[in-house]
Amino acid sequence: MGRDFNDLLRLSVAGMKERFLAGSEPASAGLIEALESDPRQGARALGRTLREKQRKNRAETGRLRRLLEYERELWDAGYTFIAGVDEAGMAPLAGPVVAGAVILPRDYRLTGLDDSKKILDRTKREAMAERIKSDAVAWAVGRAEVEEIDRLNIYHAGLLAMRRAVEGLAGASDVRPDFVLVDARTIPECAAPQRGIIRGDQLSASIAAASIIAKTARDNFMCELDRRYPGYGLAGHKGYPTPEHLRAIRELGVLPIHRRSFRPVREALGMEPVQPRLFG
Image (cartoon, rainbow, N blue to C red):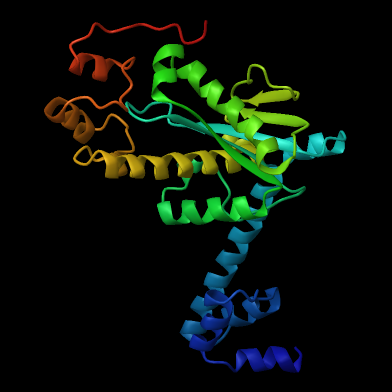
């Protein structure tokens, strides 16, 4: 062991925790082994914690590498600007459906990047969205409004929002995607070649990033609508058919932002249910 290594072992356990747990300095394998055999109980516990942290870091590195497999295949085939596209807000009774489109830098890795539905902490999701926007080659958001949802049906309105998000990339940065990866679908009237990937928000870094952009954009808009229409709890449930939301519709009435093609809204209005063709 070198002098620096021995100096580290002479630190207090609290000092090593601050340095290797609270801080960003990595602990070497040798230091972890030494801590695990240290006579101090606290040092041994720290060694076990650092080894588990090291294991999780390796697992996350592997997960992020796998998350780029679709993009890497396209990069190797000569494509440069690969856009991931996903939407948020298909199931709610109120508000628009929102899509995100993101072009990530080559070999981009962001710890914790995943399907937005798996990132439950709103603060973490917002921070990740801001980081993605800062790092992305280009990003854009597209929406389909309530009137379009009711006219087209939710499935086709979701595709419309996706198309608008893709078209928005060029308007935001003058960058046009040369390939598009989409969660589970393909986008009509999309100029670039594309591929739909089942569970794409869990398998593609670009689609996962797009899902986070879409989710945070829609959530923030629903918070704006909550200020415009108090009493419905929109900032909390984001328009989803929760018991609180259904009760508010019954007691306070239907708002202009409610989707009249959705059964609970139609029932509140005394209208007959509709059976739209989603995939026609």
